[in-house]
Length: 201
Image (cartoon, rainbow, N blue to C red):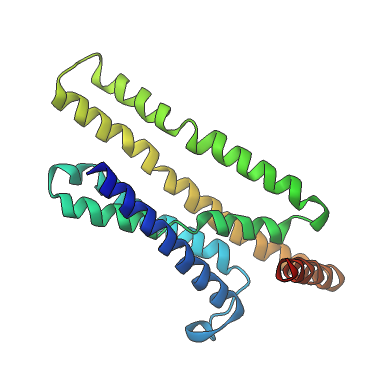
């Protein structure tokens, strides 16, 4: 069961990440169905929408273990599919707001804090909350419900992701409105330089 769930999450993450990037890029450039709603805020908005849509299913994934195993597979796939592009969305926001001379340092700090505050302590935090909730009981049912309730704490972090991406979109728009024409042109030139460098590599 664990191997199947792992495979489902891996496939959902790969497919979802690619789809999120496709949506954000076409929305930003005004292509296909996004011709009338083109916006430079596409990447943070896609991240915010993905986090918002993933929250309900991530909260249902734990109690679903007691209902139906195929529902568990679907919820895990969906929860991996919808927000899996968030790392790419965050990186694009970073490239938009950080000067080109400081992007390497900013990227390093982004990933250091992402792993220090996310992947590394996440299992420990969930385990600590679970141990506190079961209050020393070794009853299997108590341990199960304690772990399910503890995982709600990690799932609730999608609210933080949603607020963060939405705030990024808001302040990016505000910055663009306040930006002088000369600075706007320079930011576009910097962005094109980065894209040309990537294409050459």
